[in-house]
Length: 560
Image 1 (cartoon, rainbow, N blue to C red):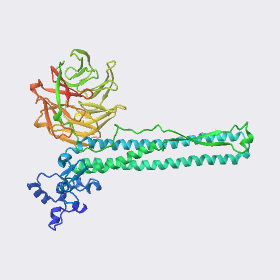
Image 2 (image 1 turned 90 degrees about the vertical axis):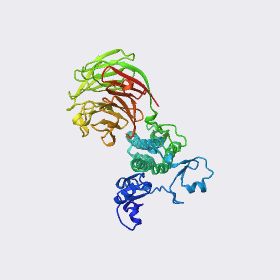
Image 3 (image 1 turned 180 degrees about the vertical axis):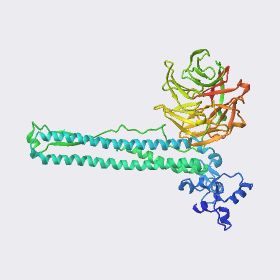
Image 4 (image 1 turned 180 degrees about the horizontal axis):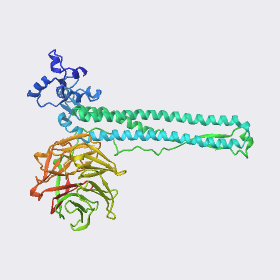
């Protein structure tokens, strides 16, 4: 494998030594720039999947060693036998799988494997296993701490007991102290040994988690699928390891106590023995955390993943809005709708029946809004007034205002932080703990644009693209929506990472796949869209709220 990565496969066959610049997954060899051009032009290889050799070399060594051809017949894997859970070449099927009924084309089996439930399940399982190992280790470390505390307490009791008797009991005290230290040391060694085993498992799981991330980015679908098979074996072994700790009572909490002889009434007895060190155990209250009840876990190669084509919209309600420039909208948990109007500097709360409930006027411009359900606070941005206003919706009072030093538009909340469109100040984040502002991505963002958040993904709009990054600002993907959207303003995301965007001048709403590669027009002018600016997805109730710039808003039920 190492020579394949350092020498162009075609040139090596011709006795020429050239370094490869790309790697072809189908040919399983590196290609220099000249051979790459021939490879791209050839009818038989122009559709092959290639990546820069530098990216391919980032894969773990054991993944690079996975071959995509049958070692017995030196032919490419073409079939997957579900009965034997094994990939086969054409000759394998004839020789050893002729009687097998559940044979599938391997291209169908590995399709969408990186976004499959099986892959997500592997990520969740590794995360869960890492969490359990950490909890078990911390529990054992806590036991060591409590043993030391027990020891300290008993030392004091022994010292107090000894004060009541004569100095000639020094030897008895020394013997008892040795017994105490020996008992604690013995149990410490047992627990420390167990902690070492747990830490070793933690390191293994951390390595698998790192490798899984690299596999997801750089490995071929077949490599990903086969690697998951290898990892699954070790995952199952580690799960059994944790279960054995509970079953064999290795997590029982060890307690040292001291039974004091009645020194004053039983002086003759004390002359022989001052007391007894007692070791006791109680059942551990630590349990395994599992995100679901696991039966025998088998990776199912073919898993149905929801796509943008599965979406169905049903119009539930048409609402008459107030104001002539609606820039933001949201839904409260009880179904009431909130709309922010930039020109009137007001926020309107509409009842379920479409009538006005009440109006808020923060005192500055009202650009975009975000409702924080846990604290029942409404966050309002002010556009050119460069501030964030936080309103307590329980008493409808302004709680505080935060100056951010730049124009500010779309805003979202997660874990005590507000992420926002800071116009020429870039994509920024402000901490609600101390109101400190940090630039996340140094980019000029257009005015009046929303941003969105889902899981650890942030979505923002530039002049020419829709971009996705993580919560630290690291780039994930971007797409150019110009072919199907004009003047993108509103953006929101559903429970499956599907992105909904509104085009003000194209008069439509489009849904984009979680990877940014596909799109579908959901609604257009025939659905009464006229300059739609604001969109909001209610993830609890699967509802999509869309507001035109003025006059009307539409509430849809979303199903798959």
